[in-house]
Image (cartoon, rainbow, N blue to C red; front, side, top):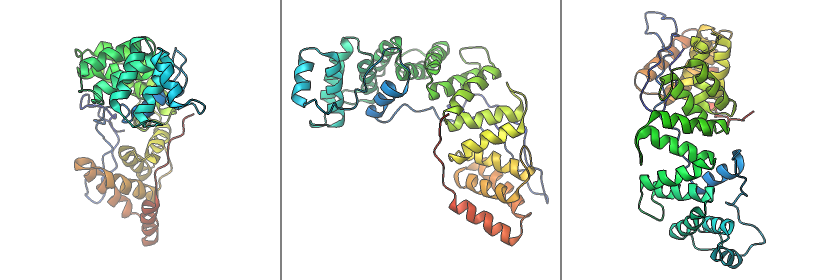
Length: 342
């Protein structure tokens, strides 16, 4: 059921489930295109640093440099940094990046990150790569970004590994090379980085940089899905619905569609609505079918919107006025639920 979410419009895996046509209406198809969203790098440098330093299991253990030490004055920090203390240089870079105790200055942050990066500090190398890519404190330069990402990646920095992989995949700042992209996604994925696990799974499905393998894709989608990655949850549902890489199991498909749908993934909401409408993998429930297809219709466009509306109308035709009013109220009251990783 459905098509896999994707980053760029590449492989189009066509699913098999569609709702039965009723009263001569069109089918409400559960086929969905792979999602054309490259899993983004972090929009905030500071948040990226925090993820890299604290959440991920990185080979080099680094203190959470993005948080100022309560006992440490700016003057003390500057004195240490001027004497070449690499950790102080990174912490001072964060102070300037966030404007903590000093005027916020990308240029000053860049200066201190560069000093630490030149001493081999992976967090500083990643920071310098990110600022070079984004054009913070310096003119944007993808080649310079790739250079510093590589230095950090080679020391095991998972976010740098992920960003370097995206650059290889897209040919930004370096040659386009799917095999290298897959290599660096895998390194980050093996450290538990959900976005890398998701992208690696997409490459497994597409056969980019490696032989195509739905089994391998299912493995990495599951790892990302277990961390609450909505697109991975949706795609794992697609694999179960179609029996690709896993035994066909519509109950499992519903389980994963629902996890993604509860986070607001419109394609999962669509497919979940179709499943409820047809009683596949779950007891038939036209009220829930109507609710989920209404939510999907609010977010989809084009053929996907038409499919959701058709399915919603079929569900409505099976409801009493009281049931219809309840389904409409449920759709109005629904709010996304943040994911909780295992």
